[in-house]
Image 1 (spheres, rainbow, N blue to C red):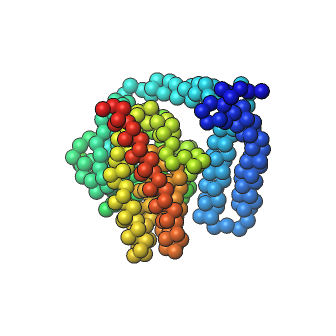
Image 2 (cartoon, helix red, strand yellow):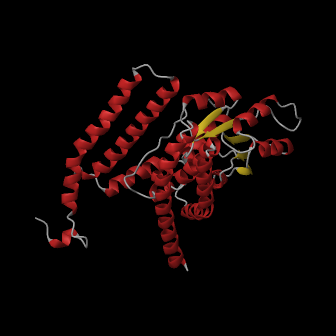
Image 3 (cartoon, rainbow, N blue to C red):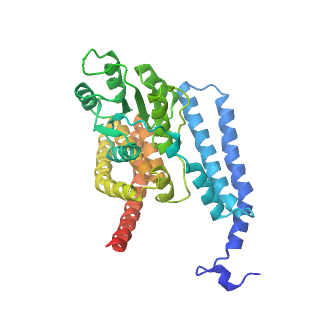
Length: 361
């Protein structure tokens, strides 16, 4: 028996909640394992390479979601509580600084998304590296012709000139100011094998999937700069859901190395920049411009991922695929869902920032 005091202000008994979660465990896992098993069966049928890649990503998403569910439901096990989970995350992130050498290098970041620029520059500068930013491939080529860099981080999808074209030009360059052998790491939001192969074919030394964690980026740079770089084996990311969480602050801080000031800056940039991108996407859908639909949805997906807005990220990804496959009717339907998640997200971020400013002023 539990006294009323054990229920807290909400009147909910924590022990009963844990029991309910434990009972849910088998049903949810059975469902997710069924999805994973179905993808295995589908892969045995006659499919195009592109269809196989899509199925593999679906399976990865299901596996990722199952892992998340398992970690949440494990709280209901005796002896496993908030403290142990916190300790586990602390052990996962401990010693990160010591894994990397003290060698400081000069890096060119070619990236058009402001949020991605902010995150990447902060990670690199905190490690002691110096960074300059180019907004597209053309700017990257111009800057490389004027200054010396030790490494280039090259986004694949950029306006004016994308990362693939820019890399090909660098590798074939006879310009005295550009080093054709400079290490180049692709920054891609796609987990498709064909996209990775295209990066390597263009002459890139490796690739990393956005949104990335600090240790992923720094370890890839470390391997290339130390001469142990490899183009294979980069961990990919998949679209994952965290229930009905509008913005996952814990996930964001994990990727940002606990930098709360940077996270608030990203929220403010998101609030300022994203409404214009939403309008541009709506216009592209209305006019049937598939290229702009795919490109803008891709940018929105990346922006949402950077702040842990996984629900909006998933909707933007669906529209990106609709644009890719010229399905404008589907894009129109999906836009309504995206707009709904976007409005919820804006309200949430505005509220969080308002609370922060009241506390600190």
